[in-house]
Image (cartoon, rainbow, N blue to C red; front, top):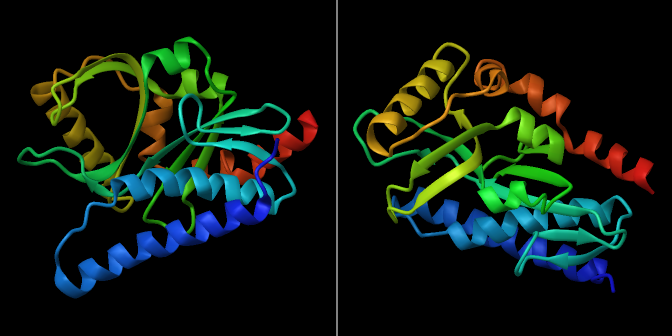
Length: 219
């Protein structure tokens, strides 16, 4: 049974306010408040809110399994990342990173993959079909620096911070650190390379509007 649109909209507004309040707190005090849980949930509700605003019904948000299921059983996995220093190692640069675990893509647990940039207000969503995520994301293995857990054969897409002059170099620097410090194995796709040279092109190509057009065609 679909979740009431108003519940989704109010939930999104609450999370958006909480997220922005944390940013304001940092601006005032220069002290960070952990907002990882808020941002993860924010990404899910951002996508769900956009869906209901455009006339679609949602019957599941969050919990176990895929993040969002529409009333027509379209499965959407949401990955949320915020701009942060990618590693706690000297020379690491800021950026975004979206990771799909091995079982999620091997078992085809989603039809669409939505990547959210949590701290941006525009150009903040990319949506890939399942096939596009498998083709465009880099296939890799690495050890998480904070938990020491090894992620095997996952999909990963990184976007470095910076302008057109230094973004790609920042991305290369982070990849070098990953190979040296977290046992990163795997080669970047042509897509990831070009994404870090010209991200604006891909925010247009993999836009939320394109995703909506797919959903409308699916009925």
